[in-house]
Structure formats: structure tokens, C-alpha cells
Length: 206
View 1 (tube, rainbow, N blue to C red):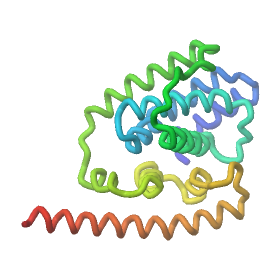
View 2 (tube, rainbow, N blue to C red; view 1 turned 60 degrees about the vertical axis):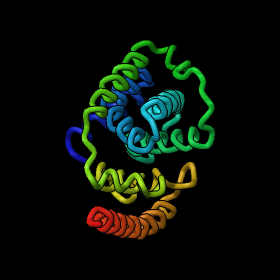
View 3 (cartoon, rainbow, N blue to C red; view 1 turned 90 degrees about the horizontal axis):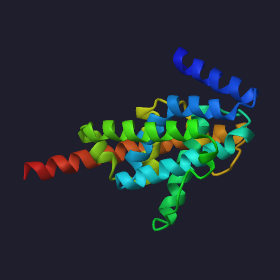
């Protein structure tokens, strides 16, 4: 963990220890909101879907932050919430309702959510996809998540195992086994990407 991220984690935890949920959520969203929304954008079919899932994530974080027990970093927990929110929407893509109702209790947090969503979306629209990113979109969702977390976000294997665990609160043994399994899956995903790249090259040469 680099110094800047460690300082952010400490700031969030100090607010949580003092039961200052608004400042804790504000610090977390300012620090981690843009990268979480970037992940959700990479995993979503449309910008509208990404914004919707981000709203679900923010509401889940706001509701869950008082009960967060710091068994992982706040960053890891945030990705866990984001992944769960993503799959809830994917299972029911036609479900739409007003989000952030709980956040209305804290106007300063709601404003941060809106600022992160607006500025990050503008930035994401200007990004140019590279060939690797385009190929990655052809993989299964969990393989895409795995590659984003490991390659783009540089998360440790135990952190990724917690994020992608089926259990709500995986034990240390669960995390260890999950990390070993994910390493193997990571290698298979990379091999799949290499095959896709080779196939694309063959098509372009015809």
C-alpha cells in the first residue's frame, strides 16, 4: 500500500472510529469513487448502466459503513460492494428506481457522489481504448473483473480473493484457497486473450 492510500485508509478509519459517517463516506468517495466508477464503466454495457450501478454502490456503502469491521482495507470492501451491485443489476436489468434516497440524509455526501459521477464520466468519455482493453471485453465478466483488479488496479491476490469470494465474510483459509484458484484462472484468462489477439491478427491479414 503506498503512502497516499495508507493515509486515506487511516483518515476513513479515524472517522469511522469516531462514528463520523458523513466525513468517512466523503473521504472514501473522493479517494476511491473515481476508480470504482471506472471499474463499473469497464464492466457495464452503457454509460447509463454504469451510472446506475454506481448509485447502487454509493447507497450500499452509505448504509453499510457503520457495520464495516475492517477485516480488509476499505478499498477492498468498496470493490466488493461494487461487484455485488453490478451483478444485482445484471440479474434484473429492467429494474430502475430512484437511488441515493438514504444519501439524502447527508447532503454533503450526496454532493460528492454527484461530483464524482460527473467529473469521472467526462474523463472516461475522453479515454481511448487500447487493443488489450477491447479484447478484454470479450471475456466472461468474472475474468474481466479479475484482469482489471490484478492488472489495472494492482491489487494483491488475497484482496482479489476477498472481493470475488462467494461468502459474505470469507475466512483466512477461504481467502488463501480463493487466491490460489484465482491465480490459475488469471493464467487461463491471459491465454484466452492471447488466442483472441492471434485470431484478430489472422482476420486482419485476410
